View 1: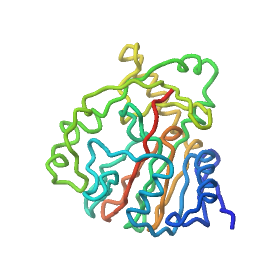
View 2: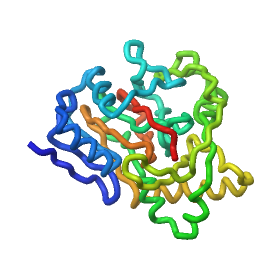
View 3: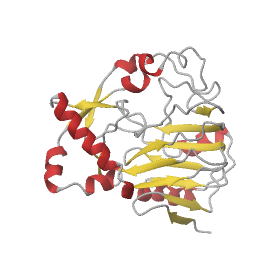
Length: 280
């Protein structure tokens, strides 16, 4: 049976029905891969995945990252257990970002599997960085097309900012100290997708420090304009999670935001990320 692909919004996202991610043949995977390129965010409901199943699905797209800071699972270091206990605020991914842009080769894709979900709240938003670029004025495109931005994990992972509890193993998600926290890497402000050729805005408020060659005030003003532009509602889609939901998104073409509005409820999810290439 052919897959049913249902768009989630006007510019990105699709729910795919008719696929069992634990039992994929090559033909079905080819359809899924094309839908991923077409829609940038793909969602599957009612999945039953073991850790090995989720890892195997991710590896169909490429090798998986082992995060240098967020601690993975003992038996599966490439997988992060994203736990938010009841009674605590969420603290992982709760502002607009693309995953791991502080890497020299940022993660190509992220795959998140929901196991324990609140009865309401905890939705995820995505924004199309490609549609955002497409709708810039010709004049603004001339300004940004050849710029370079500086990215770092410093503001997101520095223990002086996040607190020491995660580094002491006293939090639901644990961190390890790494030299990468203080390192900086440069990426094109506008990147070209290596598979589709589409262009997109590649800066985000979680990991982008500044625009290379600009004064501080100039950099801040342009970055804030771009952040606001990327996240305009018409460029977004929104997912309401349910147990057994899998979401996969293209970090080369999207940003996302995990909404923190379910303090009274526990949430347990599992994430793997697929290695990417150097942005161009």
